[in-house]
Image (cartoon, rainbow, N blue to C red):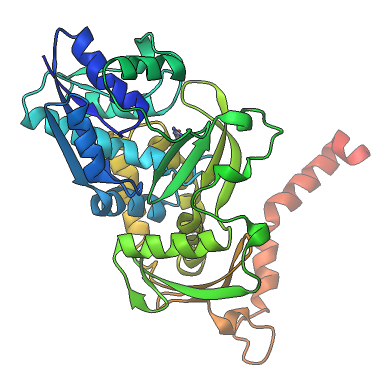
Length: 405
Ligand code: ARG
C-alpha cells in the first residue's frame, strides 16, 4: 500500500510515519508539506521526513496560490466566521488537502493520511475536500484511532523508533500559523475566565508595551483586492507580510473568542490576525463608499454564508462557486484607497478615496452648495409613511387593544 501523508514536522505527524508503516503492512509512506507562510524551516522538515522513514518527501511553496485563490476571495467576500475569525486555518486546509490529492494521484497512491484529531474542524475540511476531489482515495486519520493518546506516549513511541523528538520544552499550546494568521489553543486558555498568557502570542506584541503615538498608512485596492501600501504596488506575500509586521508591532489583531465548531462543541480560540484585521477593516470601509445601499446590505448576508462555507470545509462545493460569482461581480467598483491610523491595540479608518465613490458632497453637505432638494422630502414621507398611517387608522376604528394602553 502507498500512502501520502500530510507532514508538518511536529511530533504527531512524525509518529504517523512509522505508525502507518507498522499498521498497514509495511506501507510505502510519502510525506507532503505545504508552505502557507508558517515561517518554518522547510528544507529541515523535508530532511526530517526522510530520516523518519518517508520514501519521498515533497515540499511546496503554496503562498502565492494560497493568497490568490483563497485569501483574496475571502477578503472580497468579507468572510469573518461568526463575525470575527478571519479563517486562516480554515482557508489553508482545502489547499493542503488538494495538494495531498495531487501528489497521491501523481504517485499512484492508494490513500492519504492527515494528522487531525477527532474533535476538531480540520478533519472535516481535509476529508470533505479529499472526497470532493478524489473519492476513490482511502483516507486515514491515525490520531482518531491510535493508542498514542498522550504526549508522553508519543515521545516514548518516537524514541523507541529513533524518531527525533523536538528538544525544546514545548509550550502547552496547539498552534496553527500561516501568513493570514495564527491560532493558539489549549493550556490554561481552556478555562474561559483565564486571560491568554503572555507567551501565547507569536505575531503581535502586547498593546500595553507597544510604541507610543501612531502611524498612518494607506491601503490601495483594485476590485476588492489589496494591491498597494502607501502607493507602492506590492505582491500578496509582501503586502500581507508588511501589514502583519506593522500591526503586530502595535498589538493590533488579537482576537479572543468562543466559537461554535462543526462537530458540535464550543471552543475557546485565541487568534492573531494583524494584517488580516487591517485589510478587512479597510476593504469593508471601501465597500461602504463604493457599493449602493441594497448591494452592501445584501452582501453582508452573503459574507456570513461564505464564511460558514469556508469554516465548514465546503470550499470545493458548488455553493461556494455560486456565491463567489456574486461576490466577484459586487467588487467591480471596489477600487480606491483607505487611510488607516494604527496605534497601540487599535486601527481606525481616517480617510477614503475612490474613482467609483458614490458619496456626493453636494447631496450630503449641511453647508453651502447643497444640491439635495429637501422640498421633495415631504411628498416622499407622505408615501413612505402611508402603510403605518393606514394601520393606525384601521386599528383605531376597530378599537385595537394596542391603542387602549
Ligand atoms: N478553530 C480554528 C478553526 O477551526 C483554528 C484551528 C487551529 N488549529 C490548531 N491546531 N490550533 O479554523
